Image (cartoon, rainbow, N blue to C red):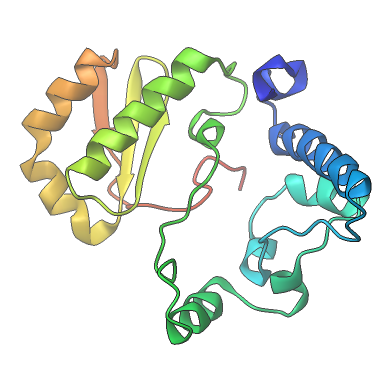
Amino acid sequence: RELDNKNFISNNFLRCYYCKKELFARLNNLAGKFKINYVLDASNFSDRKDFRPGSRAKKKLGIRSPLEEAGLNKEEIRKLSKNFKLNTWNKPALACLASRIPYGKRINSRLLKRIERSEAYLKNLGFKQVRVRDYQDFCRIEVFKKEIPRLLQKRKLITKYLKKSGYRYITVDLQGYRSGSLNPV
C-alpha cells in the first residue's frame, strides 16, 4: 500500500510519518474490530536518539511502546533476549528498504527490488549487517567495519553482480554500517 501513497513515494523527510500513520490507523481499526485494547510496537529507548518521524504518528494514534516506556535500550533488550534464550537475541536491525534511498528521490518498486536483491546477495556472501544505499547510478555499501576487508576481497564478485543490477559505480562506506546514515544531521 505504501507505493499508492503519494506522500510516501515523494520521499521527503516525513516519509516514515506517512507510512506509519497509515499502518497504525489500519492496526487501530483491526484492534477495534477484535476488541483489542492496545496496539504495540517494538520501539526502544535507543530510538529516541535518531530522527524518527514515524514516532510522531505513533503518538498521534495512541500506539504504545512497552520497551521504550520501560527505558530499555537495544543492548539491554539483546542481553535480556539472550538470557531468555530467544533465538532472535542477535538479529540484525531490519529497516524499511525505502530508508536506503536519499530523501527527495522518488521511491518505486523497481528501486526497492534492486536494493532488496543487492542486500540479499551480500548477505548470502556471509555479511551480517548490510545496507545498499541507492543513488540511482551508483550505490554505497555499508557493512560492519570489521567486515570491510572481507568485502574488499570479494569486490570482483560483488562488482559484477551489482553492475548487472544496474549500478554504474559501486562504492564502499569506509565508516562502516551506521543506522540512519541518510538521516539529516
